[in-house]
Image (cartoon, rainbow, N blue to C red; front, top):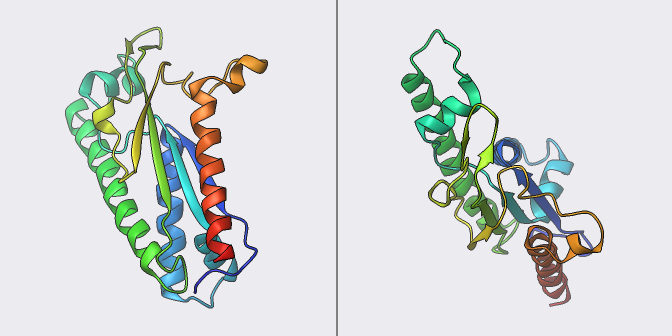
Length: 197
């Protein structure tokens, strides 16, 4: 068994490009762990304990040209053609997503890491348009959400409101927070159950 009894499960939560950072973090950690497992015991422990990942509005696959222009260009001229820049950007998103899915499968199979114990992944995406002033639209559409997750959730919010519960007690019952809370509770329960068996 790769995991040590008593380890606390780790659940990573990323919003928007933060989810891509999570993918790259896992890729970096797994590359280091494979290269020399004795090199850094903390990396091994991190991967052993990684039990869940929750993505809020992360563009795993691609952005549309109008979305890319509205977010990044703001009507400014660039040295490269906008279409060329978008192609490079989307290729990077796809590369990161495919690498992430492969790495997760490998981490789960590795006897000294997860030893067959799954890493649960959920993605949530917005259905309301985001108003950036110079552009208005949906930034991450359902088709762009693909991280090999077990489920995709629809949240009635824009890109920035998707992970911001309302203030006060009402925020604790909103889907934005409730889905994440339930996900973390389920992951922790499953890990405790595995530790007992």
